[in-house]
Length: 451
Image (cartoon, rainbow, N blue to C red; front, side):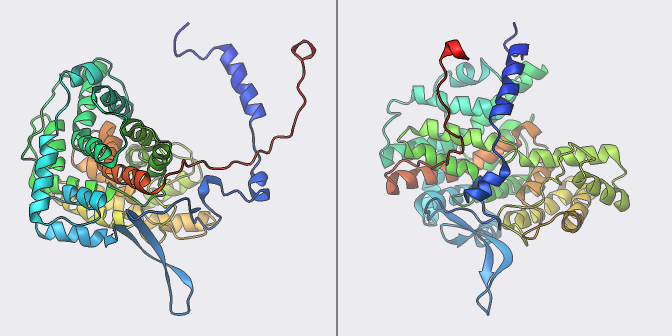
């Protein structure tokens, strides 16, 4: 029997499971349970407090009413738009500065930033033979799984893995922040070599390079890149570094951290959450949707594009899920500030790398999809392009392989996860233990001989 075989016995058990484990939607209303921790208006159920980041999608008008507004994202109280404009105006890379802000709740001065950048470069190394033994010897087809396994493996090489004092956790987190690009890119290299039959190329990072520069240096065959390409990837890392405390992977970090477990277990759990297509893998679905569109219709004809989008909503195109991927967000309605930033990033890359036609197609879909969704769906709030709509486009124009889209998200979000892990250790002191209401009626035990 193959390890992957679904036998008739297992099929029978799955049918039994389906028959015995169905909770009707009406029960959620009856017991006032907000499925997905979201109420009917899309507002999240509050489960904690944080100082690290927050999002704003509504404001109070002159009459005291709560009304939708253009979305805003804040890191430690600082508007991310202002943060981005600051380092872009100076023609600097911003991810390291953003990481410092998230971890220490202050913007570094020039000396502090230089010292921090140098420290991350110094510790951007792996234990001896780690790449060979823990990444390349058991290559997998999904880079996120290999990344998660590598993180857990680092526990073995840590001489003090279970100490959850702030100093020790900070040491561990800084090392993970520094080596995540290596772990992700090397996992991808192993996949290409062992599963696709390509040459194995492992390139070491350069200490003088920023995080974004090193990703491009390590992933590209010739190791070369332009400064605009590196700055655009850096920008993508900045806006993916955190997103409030309520996103799935960050909440996972809080929940697992609250149990008192080690850093490697907590971050591995967050990676498992981010891997899901409803979270970090969403931008891949956007790219796949556009690829299907280009194969199916003439994308130069706007009428055909509009009909294709309508067919998506009617479950007659692509994966027949009834979704236009990259549209809408649980919180934002008028606009996703990250999408607005990435849109301009994509515009610059389109001109730089010759993707003007592709960018124009994305823009037409971004303008048309919300109108169609409004016509075909009953909505409680507005719909606009979200960050996933443009991030996949940016990575595509940078020539990055789709297998690295979600790992690059992780290379950015490790900064936010680290900050939230430290915050949970410092301020909570209790295990997070959500309540579930049982809706199963009591049944008598029946002896085996009578069943």
